[in-house]
Length: 134
Image (cartoon, rainbow, N blue to C red):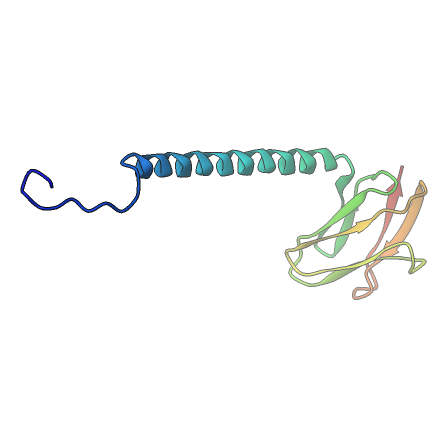
């Protein structure tokens, strides 16, 4: 009985079970957050680590290509700053071919052999460029 004369009801739980459960929950949330932070850091470092193999090699603006040299086998990013779709298609039609929507970017893998690779836009026949692979 409690101090009011009402029989106490036992639920079969120890008095300190609820605080321990809360404490365990808080610890579990802390562990999950720590894992999220660690995984985020790993993901971020792998992205920055891959930036040496991922490069913006082609920029499109005003119906013209601007290129920067890229490493053999690197992931090449093409940035389309025009308001129309373009392609970056190797003149041999086998080394690379990518379509890029207006205001978007796309990627392709640079050839594995160093050299100069001429390319064009399949949509706009006046657009030509050369990708230098080092």
